[in-house]
Length: 117
Length: 495
Image (cartoon, rainbow over all chains, first blue to last red; front, side):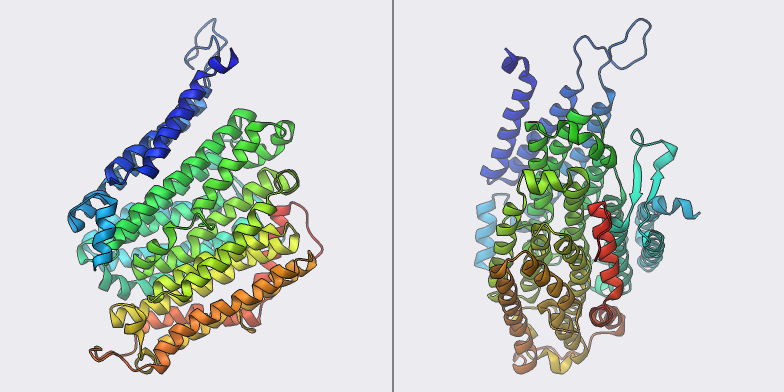
């Protein structure tokens, strides 16, 4: 049952592969960013879930409680989420600029236009 | 004051960045503040290098929190050397930037441009100085985000697409690094590099740690443009504004190589990386392919900037090759090449920046006949080009010499022969540019151009001169590189 008991890691692996596949396989620049987000989210879930402890409670000092979840990965991922938001914003801003200059956000279209030049 | 130097190294540039952004309406002042910031950063880097030149280590507890709980900044011979490279290049590129950026960037965005440049600079410095694994990830992203913005400001419309591709690949790289760091944390419960190194031996024989090593190595290899993960680099360097290409080509990949060295040598240890996982047998074929194939591609480029970008991929191959010898001498040659290639490539891209400033572009057709009209620019290009090829009395020769020695010491005769052969390929593609500039007539519709202004020429010649100075008087870089190798290996070697 250990394989099922570690279901959080299975979720991470599946999400990571879905995200990675979208980034590679999609020709649409916005969808690539979506894939990148899913890919990053899998890493976030990995960190957050590894902080969990059986029987542990939220990391707030309470009388009579000795088992706490590890707060450090949560804090790390708070930072990583901010980084992820900045990356998404940056990526989408670039897509807007690409759309302005090429009139398209499909990779094939754009490469075709560049080759014709 | 001096005890806070490690913090100042990063904080000066980090705090100046928003200030420069507020000065967006006063482009001249924004440039001035950035210039002063970069010079101050360089001064700090020099002082740090002098402090650790005797082999000592500076430890700095950020905010007074003792490591491993707080973030520690740790300066030894290795990262002081990298900090010096970043500081030197940014200090020299700033005087160059004024005229070049005025021409290439719209006036209402110059302040924003310099603000992004300072963030990229601070991010790279932060990567080099911190001793906290997660902090490395954050600084990687700070410098990367700023670099994406800088590259997208190129005049060519393909610059935005190049920046987008860099963003996708760069983010995959840093996320891999993050996952690897997560694996390390899950096994050891610490993020401090020194603490990691102390605790890893207990758990080293687990699949988790091997997976961590794989994730980190692949993630960083994407950032340092190791063949075949280099696909983002040629476009990004070709279409970025001149000054950005100079700065990034000289620093960004070098810092990533430093991080790889830090993880391989300090955190995982030589034994684990090279003996147990035989990393050398992965790195060496990739390094050799990475030298030969991009060099051959460079020969067939029509754009000088793109040609040099492919040559940068090849030069990364040389640095990785030195590491793959798994010897102290090979490591020292690689670390030495970080510096020698930084000044050489920065000088070359600055000469290209001068050409762009006057000619508007650097396709071989446009560069034709440029030597007659811009003799000093082309002379700088030739001298720095000789250093790239590795001709004696230049900085490039010094590293090629040590690389050859390291190859022969391990008995890799074919590798040594290949090293010499690829230098010839470098001579071929540099000759293509020289031939066009010196021996071809300018195109019919050529604009009447003069020599580049002194504001561009002087910084170009400072670095070009440096390639000669450090080729003839090589004790300083060799000494520093030995010191850096000592710091990475953890034991002083008998050089």
